[in-house]
Amino acid sequence: MSYTPSTGDTITAARWITAHAEHIAGNDFVGLGDYSASNSEMQSTTDPYPAGVESLATSGVGELERIRYQIKTQFGLSQWYHDVTVAYETFLINIASYRRPNLVYVSATQLDVENNTGTSNETKILFPDGTSRSVTEDTSSTHKYRRFDITADAEFTSGTEDSGLRAALSEVANTRYAIYAVKSTIDTSNFVLVGDTTFPIQANFATLNTAYGTNGWVFLGYIINGNGQSGSTDIMSFKQAGPIMFFNNSVSGSVGITNAGVEYATTSGATTLTYTYAAGSANAQVPNTITHILWQSNYAAVAGSAGIKDSGAARLYRQVHANNAVHADQIWVIASEGLQLSNGPGSSIAYDIDMLGYYDGALSSGTNPLL
Image 1: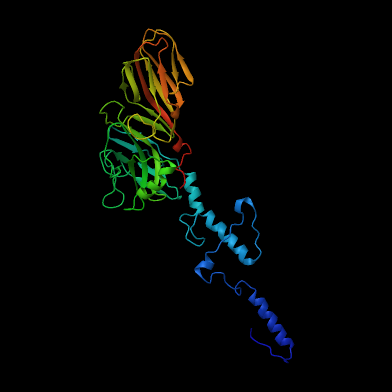
Image 2: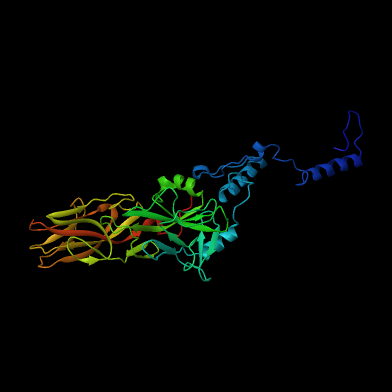
């Protein structure tokens, strides 16, 4: 106030006009008081719709707190005034132009991540924070980024970048490995491929975040190192199309039929052969995110009808009729159901249960789950 009245003063027109002019100026945004006098006050927010019920503001402060809350939650910020990692416009452009790349079989020890842009030898990865990284590499001559080598150690934190198994791991026969694209911290424009036996289920997210950084990894699929038979250490030849994987190798079991796939159970003579589901990375186990499996069941000659059932023999999936020669059958089954082959007459015969392909539920959305 430019003038402070005292008792007995005469209120003149000029004083009255000046006082009201100052009130008007003080109510302009430039003249309003702040609501960030301390860090605590600046960080104060209020949920305007808790539990689906409106929370009505009763003051300008309450209105401001509710707006701050929406800014904070919409951008996923720890405080409403923190910098946004990636602008919405950039994020939407990244999603619209992105197709998650497939894994591509190269050899018994190597695989590539496919070229998924219009630039030759380039692969783009969209990470959960909305940022993308692209690397260009001719894998016929180098393999730092786009080519995974199971005999190499992955390096993405210091020294020279390289794609391979997580440093604490080594190649093991008949083991399943998840392949991740991981942000490099050596060069913040690059990523590498890392093989790991820690699979991308919710219970493992904290472990993966510790190993690769929050928002620093994207799951691309699995490889199986070995055909399920003793001592097998080659990456199985495969074809991936999004969440669907088919094997393209050759395996022959007790029945003598050669087919593609990975052996999960076999016997040279029994009345039944049962594979009971087990989740994990070891031989005859199924990675946790695989929801459906294409099984091949091989039978020696049966004298009467035989059956393909779930592992608990509660449901009959398919009837195998009497024949005098070996028999092969394929069937899609929910992974956790397992499989049982049985011989109707009850005599001992040879059986094989092989995985020909599978459907991976973690890849069905086309992008990595946001963490």
